[in-house]
Amino acid sequence: MKLLDFDRYIRSLLDMEGTEAIDSSLNGIQVGRKEKEITKAAFAVDACMEVFERAADWEADLIFVHHGIFWGKPVPVTGRQFQRISFLMEKDIALYAAHLPLDVHPEIGNNTGLAAAAGLTGLQPFGHYKGKAIGVKGTFVSPKTIEEVVASLGFTARNCLGILPFGKKEIHTSGVIAGGGAKEVEEALEENLDLYITGDVAHEVYHYCLEGGINMISCGHYNTETFGPKLIMERIASETSLETQFIDVPTGL
Image (tube, rainbow, N blue to C red; front, side, top):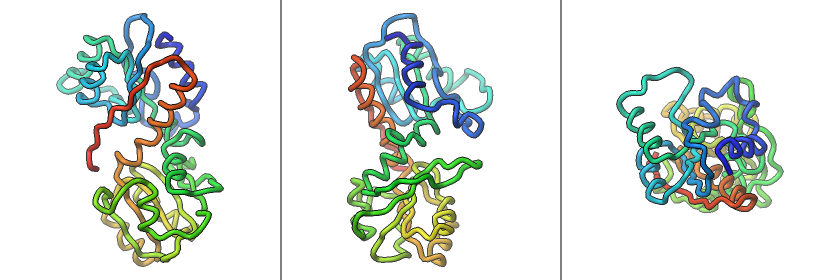
């Protein structure tokens, strides 16, 4: 598979144009490579030097990330940006990014993966960003406590950024937005959901949750955005001959 073949394949999986108007990420090929076959693809959340170096040690031909290195405006190729791009070019490793297209995918997206891990069923669109629903909401087959939801997600109170147990003890419904969706708890309140699951925290939402009587789990931006890269990696491994590997570089945030 050549790089352009990989790009066409990803675009057949993800709606790369559907979020173009609201996504500042340069989705798609961010750094190219020589016209050679791709046999090994690494997957990660962030485009950072530790990911690049570990991918190079594994002899990857391509790195697929959720957070790329280009965000909406031209930047000089100096300093860290020069270091990153020159490293990739020297090692002949392509960089591919999918931000909101990976968040919103109904089968292999961050939000769907996070909701499925929590045990939510009957998923529906939820959580609007610039007029487009990017999250999901659903119902638990049987009521759960907030501690049970955290455990279902594979986390603990220690590695979550914040847990606000201000709602019902028996949780039936939840909204989910991975990553930086702290303030969207207001939409969960408007929809009278029992729980809101996201990545980031925001100081001001504490009182929204307390006064509105809703539970909120902030699992960490990084933690919640590992689901999509892993799911698309599994899909690619099952449908192509590429050798794949997930590179885990948690930030604790």
